Image (tube, rainbow, N blue to C red; front, side, top):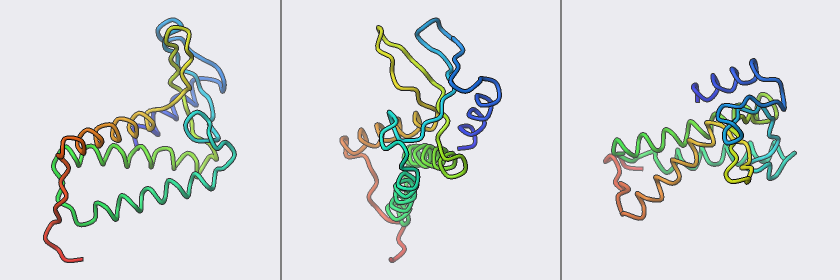
Length: 146
């Protein structure tokens, strides 16, 4: 979350809103935009609903992880997921929007602009799906009774 917020502040300070800086031609640009919705601006204008969804996700993860002994890989994956959720939740709560800045164009397809927190969320969910598929997720508790 800290790295996410540092990057977002650097972008907001150095790049004017709705402007781009080309990094690799038309393929990769840093573009400062404000996203008032979720991914692809879905649910735009539903700030409080998105805050509630993020808080519910955090509470669910806390409940799910509360008495578990996690492997190092799981700690890294869940930490990445929590950091991503918190990074975007911070923006949404204090600014009313999420700062996005990573813009890619693949073979004339303009992919929606996103941020580091989004990367953390997507990669961690993908890794969790792989662990679940492999049957490698630890379902044990740490021995404490509930």
